[in-house]
Image (cartoon, rainbow, N blue to C red; front, top):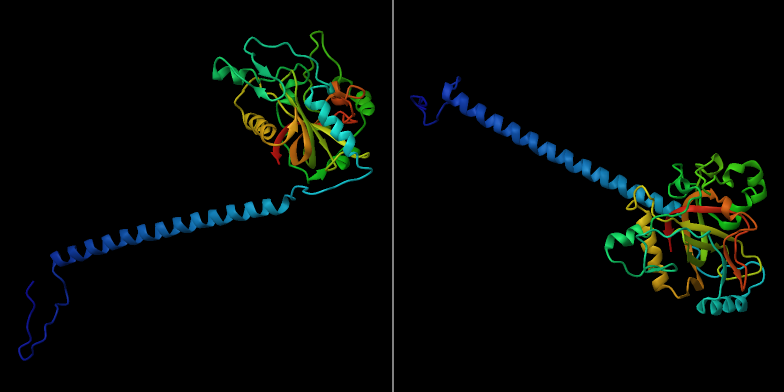
Amino acid sequence: MNLPRLPQSNQWVFPTEPSPRGAIAVSRIALRFERRADLFFALVAKSMSLAKVALITLGLALVSCATEPPLLIGRFIKGIPQPNQWKNFLAQAEQGQIEEVRDEVAQPSAGMHWIDYQFGQVGAAHPKAATLSEIFKGKFRPEAKTSYARVHKEKTTDVESLLTALPTDAEMTQQHHGLVAKDSNHQNHVPRIAEEKRSVTVNAWLYWVSRQSDDDYHLILGDTSELSSKTVFMNAEISGLPPDKPTRQPFVRLRDELRNVLATRPNKNGAFENPLPVRITGSLLWDGEHRNPHNVGPKKPIDIRPKKAWEIHPIHDFVH
């Protein structure tokens, strides 16, 4: 556009009113700037939100770590140590001569074959058969044994403290006859009762693992780092896969993890040479089939069976 020149000066002067074409150009520039500014501030806000989420996640993780006590590493003994008895137990286990009270035998399914009941699947004609062969086959409270109590996790404790606070088998049998009864098909489908709707965690040592005919794994936990005259034992179980959804987690992962432990930690057919420090979390369950005097676990050459039928069943977390 033409700018007027002052008669007696070399300076240029802009008109007070811009032309219509100039106004349009300025408006376009301003609109472009506004859009880019909006985009810039949106990106900044998003970055700040992501950073805030990351900080919150990190904070929660640190809090979680801080509230979880460390595993009980080292020697912890109460009573009189019994190293010779455990050596004898290991020798008998290596020869397959442990007398064990097991779950009642379940009828094998058509898809089950080539199974090593101590350590798991050895071979199968099809990968799907490996999963099908690990489905829980028990008939006694299968719904409770393959599901979790949806409650807040309690503070970590130890085996003796947990068991001492729980009713005896005689008390449970008297108060809850439905938890021991079986129908005409030898089945029981009673859901969890109020006393079983608990999520508990124990620090312990893993002494013995045995796979049962119903495809549960029994984990015999003790509250001392080696066998002693006052070791208190408790049974915890990694359940067979839920029949309604065999791929459900953490059931599949836990079974694989346990088999890896059996394959990599020194043991004699499931009896650990040195009991393994573990932290076990899961749902509390009183198993009427395991009530005294039918407590499950190795009976001879030494009796390391729990004195109560209270179990962590099923296990949800297995830290080792």
